[in-house]
Amino acid sequence: MGNYWKVHGSELDDQLYLRELREEYESGKRANADEIEGEISKIKYPQYLAKTKLEEAGTYNNHANPDHVKNDKGHLGDPTFKNLFKQGSEINKFDLSPNLGTEIDGVQLSELDEAGRNDLALFLETRGLAVFRNQDFRDKGPQFAKEFGQYFGPLHIHPVAYTAVDHPELLVTFRKAGDSKRWATEFSRETGLYRWHSDISFEEYPSSFSFFVALEAPPSGGDTVFVDLREAYRRLSPQVQKFFETLTVIHTNEYQQKFARLRNQLAKVKKVSYSEHPLVRTHPVTGEKSIFFSRGFILKIKGLKDSESAAILNFLEDHCLNNPEFQVRATHRGTDSRTVIAWDNRFLVHTATLDFLNHETSARHHFRITVLGEKPYFKEIKNKSEDDSDNEDKHPRAY
Image (cartoon, rainbow, N blue to C red):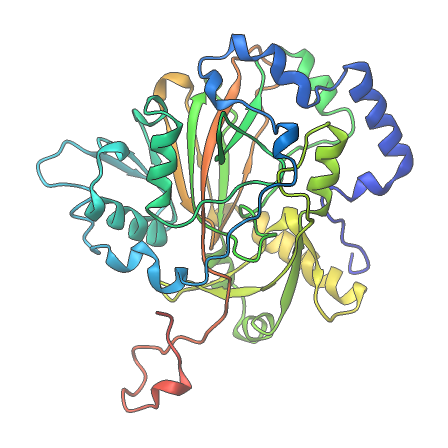
């Protein structure tokens, strides 16, 4: 096991695989980026489905966000969340697990004032994940969504994804309506299409928050599963924790870019990103430590021999992603539930599930607001139980 680490997408380096896949796209067996031309008239929210125009290709640069550590809105949140869950409101809450994730009905995100949004930031930074039902968000239009997201920080422009019309800051995910014929095509080479990742970890400044807005969704299935990497860190022995705190991981979107080219999807940002991030990171608001294991974008551990890197990464894949004790499933529950899922990418990884492809369903169509966070860092945070007379410089705090 220790000698091998498969980078997601690296099968595109196999020329035989690549040739067969290209033939499937050229024959129409698999849909490429031109698929949306025939889908616009069929979907409920056509303004949220646009591919990159030729004049847009290579014209965008993603933002840096060096002040996010001190500007994170969670610093302004009330720990009682009184501005998010207002007294006298009829609000139903259900915790998906004791430690991670809450389903909420009765809070209208579009109506939150600044204090409410600050509480929302802190809530996501402590609970990790919130699944909001019965939202009017999708009917407010792309400009509203952009402005809502910008309150929390600069918005990411994805290099290759579909977007909303004239709003490149809104990433769109789309799988068209269909029946069981989809199943045979999608699973012809793989037993599973799940891709665990933290959003845009390949960037120098990866995402803090993501807001995932359902436009259309299958009546069941197509859910998003999340893993709490704070708990994954806590489960390690102290010796292994300390060792992992010394490691740096290289993340890349190289194969994401290659796959987009194969599908004739133009790149808004043509540069392939290679970013170095600590394997263990510190949260800028809570001070909690978590493993930063964005499986889909990890290339290797910097400075280690290939076999050493592979041994550690294989261990982390098993440890982080195969333990149901720190996983939860956020259900989309069909188009009529009007669901918005929000989470903190700094200590969560997630994957979509494609368990609906052998059934006749509507489209799975969402847009995502992706807020840029801080450049990941690791700092020792002073334990409150330690002697207050200790020199503060020995235990630097996050802002």
